[in-house]
Length: 257
Ligand code: ARG
Image 1: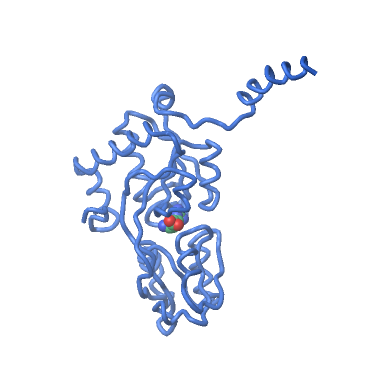
Image 2: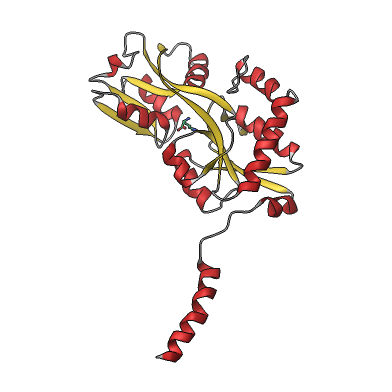
């Protein structure tokens, strides 16, 4: 009895070390490796999307600029949006930059960097469709899975049905095909999508809520968070941020403007 207890106490710490929770790469490890690993989705224009086979967008360019400031190479992992929080907690990458709006719920699971843009959720629908929050009563709404738009749609009184899609392109297609009466997404994503599809007969409607968007990283990885925030502050100061913001939006979309 005594023997096995002693054996157990010798085995447990070892097991924890081997099979215990994985450890996020800290700043020193990343710096040593010379490469930082970032995740994004690739389906959220103009922030992170594909042009042919090339991953591009405001957030893709921004992350490249941040890595450069930090003296690191950047490696991309393309991960479905709804899988990113869990994948981050499994340390499949160092941070994600995929337009995560700050929510208390998410902040329980991951840390948020300082915001890299401010924005809001907006309704889009056919010209004669429901274009205001009030008009959504009795209607169906399409949203991307696991987003703040899905949360917002749930809070709108009287909405008949919320249909969730893997990505925004699918939600937009559903709207065009009249499978849903309205679509809620980011106001800049709505604009970029409608600009590319001028004959779809879809128009932007009322804003539903506002949000601050940040990179997310593992909890308790403070030094990495500090470094990302420092690099962000530097590119906001030296004009890099503004140049990228002008390139994609013809405006400064930072939270200071
Ligand atoms: N801003 C929204 C949110 O915080 C949507 C983000 C979606 N991002 C993406 N890459 N599809 O939930």
